[in-house]
Structure formats: structure tokens, C-alpha cells
Amino acid sequence: VRLQNARVLLVILVLFCLSAAFYLPGLAPVSFCEPGKDQVPDCKSTIELFVNRLDSVESVLPYEYTAFDLCSEKTLKRPSENLGQVLFGERIEPSPYKFEFKKPATCQKVCTRTYNTNDPSDKVKLDFLKKGMLLNYQHHWIVDNMPVTWCYDVEDGQKFCNPGFPIGCFVTEAGRPKDACVVNSNFNEKDAFYIFNHVDITIHYHIVEHEQLGARLVAAKIEPKRNVTIWDYILESMPHTNIQWFSIMNSLVIVLFLSGMVAMIMLRTLHKDIARYNQMDSVEDAQEEFGWKLVHGDVFRPPRKGMLLSVFLGSGTQIFIMTFVTLFFACLGFLSPANRGALMTCAVVLWVLLGTPAGYVAARLYKSFGGEKWKTNVLLTAFLCPGVVFADFFVMNLILWGEGSSAAMPFGTLVAILALWFCISVPLTFLGAYFGFKKTGIEHPVRTNQIPRQVPEQSFYTKPLPGIVMGGILPFGCIFIQLFFILNSIWSHQMYYMFGFLFLVFIILVITCSEATILLCYFHLCAEDYHWQWRSFLTSGFTAVYFLVYAIHYFFSKLQITGLASTILYFGYTMIMALIFFLFTGSIGFFSCFWFVTKIYSVVKVD
Image (cartoon, rainbow, N blue to C red; front, top):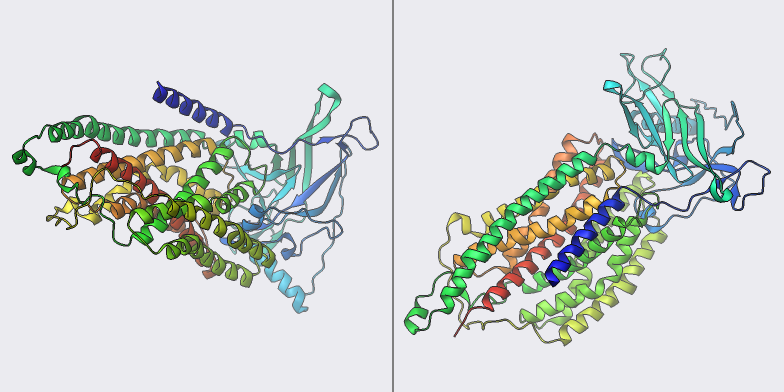
């Protein structure tokens, strides 16, 4: 009954998350009213337009709005950014574009720029503008916390919408605009640059009738061929829902296949093995043991490099809990795209606060492996994996600094992250390790022999490397479609909002990694190979290698990135994601296999 109740609760939770994925509660709505009318409380008459960083699909380097010498507002204070926005390189600034509600304005001059090609400083500014047009850098404007979306006609009378619009166009010698610079005017000159220095903005609104709340913006239109829409319109216009359901069905088929295989082993083969082993009463029968019971005296023998394995498992546990909690809150709508930077901020804060589970798991497992160098274990847990990630991130940040990109983290933020690591995460890791070493070691159901058993010659399929390579295929098959959308949101600047789907794929990935590892672990134990600890970790962790291969394929087939700096940045950040994914999936494989081995050896009679 308890198991059925748990399953019902899980189904309700997943359905609730899926329903939340289609409706994202943003920030509190803002009411607007005509100037001079004060009858509506908390009502604004001025509509502000903010500008964000400019980025490109052909370059990983984003730049601040002011870097292109565009019309800017220098009198107002820029909004403060949270940690997630700083990490993603967002730099929101006030713009000189101002509107009064229900007050039309025509031909308003914002600013004037004059350049002298003989002036070296002006020449640098013009060259930078030309570079931005050649690389198709995109504006990102914000009205009432809604992103600007550039829509233009494509084939079959449909429209393609992009969250941003280019700063200008480069017309080639053939007289054709480069890339997707679609405008309603003819280009008279060839091999020339055209900057978009005129915009027509139409703001749409609706009146809130109940409670006299005034009016709320629903859409704003920018010409030529540019428009801004409310969140509901943006999300409903996304064409990926059917593909997401295909991804879920594909993953479920894999899970059902694996579940059938595991169920067959558990209910038939393994059940028969246990019954046969427990019926052996005589000494002669016991001497004729075969299969996985033969290695009962060695199956819990401490693995080689147990220190490193325990450190990896501690960090993997930290990442697993962080990912689960972050996706759960995102699934409920707290971390929607309307709340900019909230997703990354939540993940970083959770990682800092989850140092205690990492230290506890690493210390408890290391003690069970018979380790005695507890100081080294604690220090490695606190500094090894986070140190590798921070070193990679710091090198990438140096490149961004050198390129003058807005994604370069300010020195103060870098110090703040180091303070979070050393002053909060490290002490919490030490605290968890203290409790982990204080507890008694994990009791195994069978004793370990003093003399190790020799592992017989293995066939090709039961050798470590083929099993590890095969073990990562099925988990990767569950996530590769979802992975495409995630990479699009990171590198192609497309909006990702289907956290309900992502949470469901996360659950499927956990189940698939567990079942695939248990399946291969059973086959290796039947082949009398008891070295399962590292193999279980690497079997599901090898999914990260397929992720890395897919990221390389994505770079060459989907992206148009040019330049050495952008290429280094892409692969540098990809290596960080691959390492985190390796620790995450590897820990799932180890703990599921550890549970399986403990369970089957606890139900057989061993003298």
C-alpha cells in the first residue's frame, strides 16, 4: 500500500510539474494609466525601455550595449543584477527611449552621432560597429520585463521569431543582405554597411476592468519587422511542444525496455539463483557453488583508489541534490525566464549550502573502504572537483577580460564567489565529514576474505571497457533530444522554459542509469568479476563522454562560431558541463549498484 501511495504521489507531482511548465508566473504585473490621472493606486504613466547585452550566434563573446556607441542614457542608474545574471553576462541598462501611456509620439530624435574617418578614435568605433554587423550581433530590448522578439516571414506564410534584432546589415558585392537582415527597403549600394537607426514602436495594452487596476501592457511592435510580446504569447508560439513529447516517448520506451530486462532478471533468474543457493545444505553442494555467489567473499573488497572514488561520489551527491531541488523549484514556476538569472543563482546557492552532504558521503564511504587518511579525504572533497571547475572558469574569464566582453565577471563578483566557497561551502564540507567519520562504517551482509580471489579470464563483452562504453548509450539516448534544446538556449540564445519536461527527463535519466548499471553489474558478477565499484561509476558516468561528443558535433553542425577566442570559450565551458554531468551520472550508477549488491548478498545463506 505504501509503495502504491508513493507511486500515486510521484505521478501527481510529475503531472503538476508538466502543467506548471506551460504557465510561467513572472514578476508582479505593472499597471499603467494616463498622465495626470491618480485615481488608480500604484499606477505608472511612463513606460521605460531597457537594453541588455548584445550577442551573436557567430561569437561566444557578448558585449555591453554601450560598447557599440549607440544611443544611451547616462543620467539614470542601471538596475542591479543578481548573481545568475552576472554569471551569464547580462548587463541591463536604462535606454533613452521613453513613452507616456496612451500618448502617441512621432519622429522623436533620440541622439545624433557624427564620425570623422580621419579621427583614430572614431575609426575604432566604426570598425567595431562593422564587426558587429558582420557577426550579426543582436539587440536585446526589454519593455515591462518582456523581451523584444524580431519576427519575419519565412516559407509557407509562417513567421520566425527571434528574441532580439540585428544592429544593422552588411550588403555583399552581389547585392544581397548577409544572413537574416530582413528590411522593407532596397539597398542602393553594394559591399556596404547599413545600421538600423530608426524604429517604430507600437505598444498594445488591455484595460483591467475589475478592481480598477488600470491598464497592462500585452504587446509592443517594433518596425521594421520587429515585435515584443507578453510571456504567454511568447511561450504559446514556441513550436517545440510536439518534439518534447516525442522526446519523452522515446525516453519512456527505453525505460520500459530496461525495466523489462531488470524485472526478468529480478523475478526469474535472480529469484531462482537465490532459491537454489539457499537449498544447498551439504558441504559437497556448497563446494559446487557457481555464478555470483562464488564471489561473496570478495564483492565488498575495498576498491583501488578508494580515496578518489569517495571524493567523486561526495561531489556527485552534492550535484545530484542541487539539480533535483533546482529543477523542482523551476518546475513550480519560481525560476521562470521572467525572473532573470534566478535559475543560475538558485543552483549556485544550493551548491554552496550542500557541502555537508558531500563531506558526509565522501567520509562515510572512505571509512567503509578502510581508509584512514581522513584529513586528505576532507580536503580533496572540498577542493578537488570545485577547484577544477573554478580553474577552468577562471581561465575562461581571463579570455573574456582580454576580449572586453560583458560576460567577463567583475573582480568583486569573483571575490564574492571565492568567499562563498571558502567561508560557507568548505566549513560545511568539514562539518559533514566530521559526522561521516564519527559514524561507524557501513556493515556489509557478508565477510570479506583475507586472500583475494583470482578473476577468471573474461570474454570480450564482460571485459571492463566494452561494458563501460555500452552502459552509457541508453542513458544518453533518453536525453539527447532535450540536450539539443538546452544547448540551443545556451549558445543560440533561444529561450528555454519547459522545465516540466526537463524534470521528467531528469527522473527518466536517473532510472535509466540505475537500471543499465544494475544489469551490467549482474552480468559481471555472474562472470565472477567482483570489481564492481569503479565499473559501476564509470558505466553510467560514460554518458558524459557521449555528451561531449554530441557537443562537438553540435559545434560543427549547428553553430556558426568563428574566431579562436570563441572556440576556446565554447569548449572550455563544455568541459565544465561534461565534468559535472560525469560526477552526477557516475554517482547514480554507483549507489544503485551498491544497493543491488547489498540486497542480493543479504538474502543468501553464506557460511
